[in-house]
Image 1 (tube, helix red, strand yellow):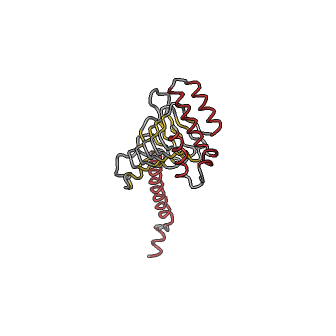
Image 2 (cartoon, helix red, strand yellow; image 1 turned 90 degrees about the vertical axis):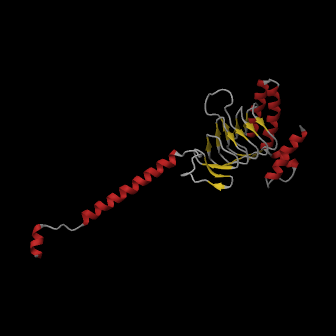
Image 3 (cartoon, helix red, strand yellow; image 1 turned 90 degrees about the horizontal axis):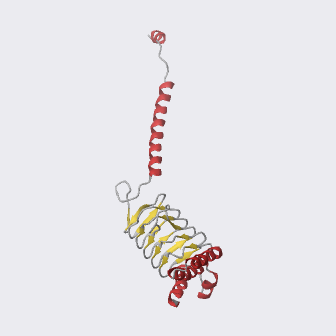
Length: 227
């Protein structure tokens, strides 16, 4: 237990250049306070002391602005940076060396039972404001871009951006979304492309009509005079 608590502090010193020493991290970092509170609440949850566990998690939420359900499973060296607004659901599973920034939601998509929250494998980074929703797996060494909404599984070593989230880099190779069929669709972008093509077509037609209207009218009388 003490090794785990020490790891929770040391990862902040490794990841945050603003952190100067262990004492400062233990006293001033809300992310560390939230994780430590969760570890106690999770212990109570496993002892089936559900009400007390939820009470501890709610007190922690009030004090830190970070909501972690006591049922969530969290590995070693989780780093929650500027954690205000972070939400981690009951059936979440988080591996080792994961980084989560402020405003991140690891949540569900409805009222389904059982495993309904995501699993984050080792060394995953979830950037500011990203939403990972539903029971899916985010592969190890993957990055979720700021503001992204991820609704489907992400393979290891991937970078995901956008709404809905789509893979832009996998195993160090940039993905061509027009050719690679494993990527998530982006109906909003497709609609914009369709509207853009329609606008180009309409502009072309208007230009052709203007050119026709601006041509000089050649009447039968003017033709005789010229003759």
